[in-house]
Length: 228
Image: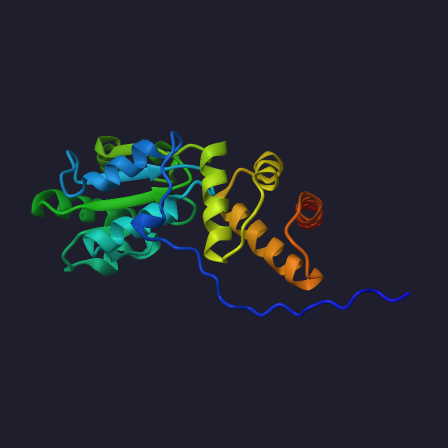
């Protein structure tokens, strides 16, 4: 008895959407979405979005960048932006080296010119590797908004949308299973949807709870091997 032939899936380049219309708002990200939507009417010219990996900071930063037409700056080379006019975006700051003098002068420039600076980070600014006291003071004066881990509603909504983008209808029971078994991360949700789409095409089957369980198990085992 031979195995059923598998279909080779084509890579159609399903990229996640980062527009405002693609943004799903729940309790976990409501405050961050609100402040992004309030621009340019910010009370503070410097805003920091802080939240764990996979909480949607990149999506929110992309929405704000599109609206503000901000210049993107590398946290380690902020001084290179000297002379540019804002607004400015620094994504994923705090995980690596920070050009402290450059950031201090950029914040001063933004405040004096009436422009805006948005920064995203996995960490609260008080834990960034900052040594300059004046910079630490400037960061304390910034508006910091927390983004929580994705809640069930957000994860469900994101997966429904990711499947819909691929023109795939999925039973709610499958979504419920995935929400309760995957890491609470939007990037993980995207990866799971991609793997399920490929697995269903290979097996020429619908996306069932059993198929979802096998994909989640494979991802968990792969992560465990990587962690070792």
